[in-house]
Amino acid sequence: MEDNFSNYFNQTGKVAKDYLETRLDLIKLQAAGKLSKALGLFFSLTMAFLLFFFVVVFLGMVVGFWIGELAGSYTIGFSCAAGLFVVLLIILLVFRKALIQRPLSNMLIAELVNEMVDDDRQSEKEPAEFESEEEEPVA
Image 1: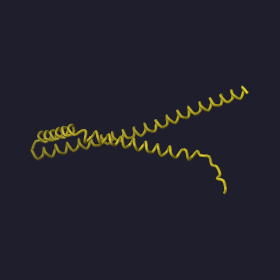
Image 2: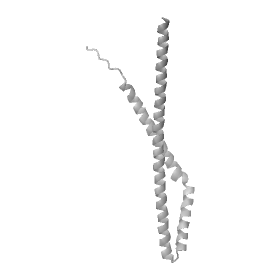
Image 3: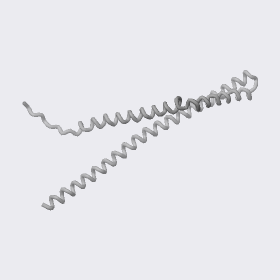
Image 4: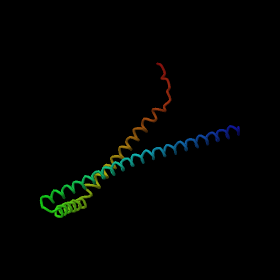
């Protein structure tokens, strides 16, 4: 009888250990998935920002040369272009919450909510996969 109890506890301990290891692996995989999504979003936003930066720089050069041609002095043209960028910077600083912070926050929250909804849908499907297939009694 003692052998049965010791076997039972040994097997239960092994099952619990396997369960905990599997659960830890699942948590690691879920964290890796979330991290990869976050890094993907970060790098895509970084690339979009760099592209936007280069577009703004070249447009500033075009505006500087264009005003310089009209004014007859490239110094005046690039000074006006710089002044335009200062005005745009002030506008961005004044309206940064409405133009930058809120849209980025909303995008991040939407991404997290979509991920949570996907996780919920996946967890609802999992029990159906593991149900035992019992034959229904014939009436």
